[in-house]
Length: 146
Image (cartoon, rainbow, N blue to C red; front, side):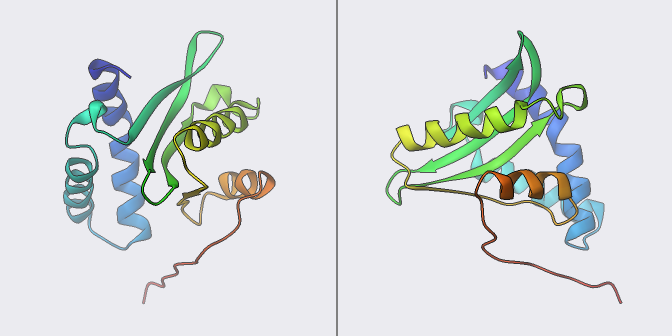
């Protein structure tokens, strides 16, 4: 991504992330906004040029079909998928599966022995895809509103 694409990506991604964070971690939207802003500053201090962070537009027939963001910790030989999003009109066409294969290959090329990700429990479609591709559950975080 270039800087303009990066800024457009954040503008697209952050509102959903803030809403999901507020809902799943039982925070106010203000708390989620602050948490998200702090995370972005921490994870991407040099925006799209931050070392070890990889941001891509996912394309299908030269159209943007989604977004992919991951980090590689070379010293620990692992990669972490921060975000994958497939636009609605490109879903159920194998785009996500191809993007995840790309992620795994890039991570391996960068020296990673393993990859990980986080998925909200309510995202059943993504969970099903990850399981189909060989990802296994590493932990479960649960909460209950009283």
